[in-house]
Image (cartoon, rainbow, N blue to C red; front, side, top):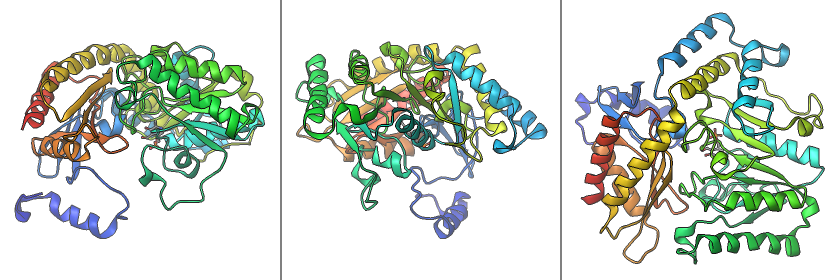
Length: 432
Ligand SMILES: Cc1ncc(COP(=O)(O)O)c(C=O)c1O
């Protein structure tokens, strides 16, 4: 920050942060958020930032939505915690609600605190109920920071480096990142080429009868906001079914309206065996879930998994209110319509700019992918544009295996005026 220290109220807090917070916790914007409302975050100076990050796809209903705030306040006064000592109403109501909005026969719910915890629980369950050890993941995937979730994460070396030994029996196949593949003009061939790697795996690395699950993001998040061709997920499901392998779909970032449907799997006509949710589930409160069929969860005996805080009543109350808002305000539909308009605008704005390789997205999950002068992924450009946006009071994040993309993850109830404000800033920063 260039602002004079004396006039910058953030400064003393940032100094304290530097002194007391473990430096491993990296933040993207060097401001201290004091409050937030709707699509805006306000720092300690009262400066206002348009938020196209939503705390990494969490505040789908905007910051501090009044209905979520009200539900939290009500719950805090009534019951805050009992853990697994008792049943409680909000857990049961939320389990019922999630089973109603999840695809198909997914109706048995376990609640956790974070996406990574949902990944851990789902992998434990898949191994237990199949009696098989191996897991297949995709190149470029992100599943979290705990040990198993990290071992399943291949979006960047930096998430894994120096944390070996990692859990074994994990086998990785390519994800159809069409734009940077050898089949940039032939999405079907790109999918076929990726899926050939299953044959290689099953022939040379692991027998399919030893594979408990395939874990996949329906749209890759941290890996670069990569939307796979429409037939990809279905083909993965066919491979899974053929070999009795459970399909775990990680909807942690894509869920709760983000891609223009309540869950991204709905775009692809696939019903997972286990589906993971977190982030947008509770409007900003920490909560996660994995949901499966009863036929599977009935094979996982009571007590084989658990959590002290998972399914906390306050987070559950927030989730119930959040889902109600998503449905009442038709926010998945809003994400589909406004997301497409924003995408169209940006595709036009990118025309003639050689440093922009591709603009892509699904709903309100949009990426701008940058190139250097030779068609290679350019982290420098992505960071330059993200920094310019910050200087213009628009918050955006980068993503991609090389940090080559910026991702736009606004609240789903972003107004037209706010969308225009953000797009104008972006256009200016892309052009400069
Ligand atoms: C697809 C996906 N899975 C899992 C996770 C991990 O979630 P958490 O950070 O809540 O542990 C993330 C986080 O970004 C994610 O994007």
